[in-house]
Image (cartoon, helix red, strand yellow):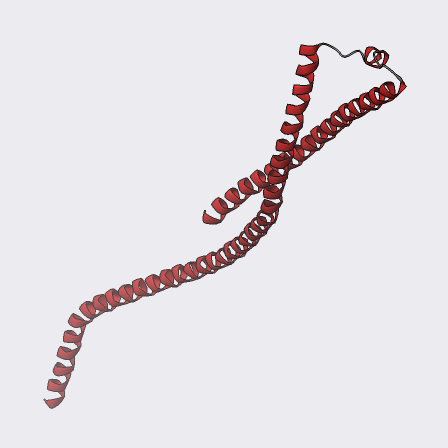
Length: 198
């Protein structure tokens, strides 16, 4: 009898285990699915982490390029500013010299215009009449000397006016070229600063 009871107990136990086993198997499957889901999410997170690391490296490399470009642009800006600072005193000096020359030229032109006006009002001086109107040889030589002085002074004034006109024109061209250089430098500087700011 005890064997029968033991056998019955074993059978009851097997039956009970058989009843629990499907529920346990289902729970085990659920846990396995949950585990697989967590594993998949971890894998996706690893992929995202690796992608973020590569993007961070690319951004860091790009940032280094931008910083290098910015440093290069700032060096160019300083170079342009140095050129501008060096050229500005030359321009200022050229403007002063040009203003002085123009003032002197204006003074000479005023004298020359007055001379032309006097000639127009009094009529063209006939140099031969002046010489022939001399009373004696001493008067003739004095008149000749004065006429030569007047003529040489007129010619010298004309020569000076022409030279100064040419010099003023040359200085004006040089000044215009320097001003154009400054404007180009300013324009380049503005563009480079905008690029650096961007």
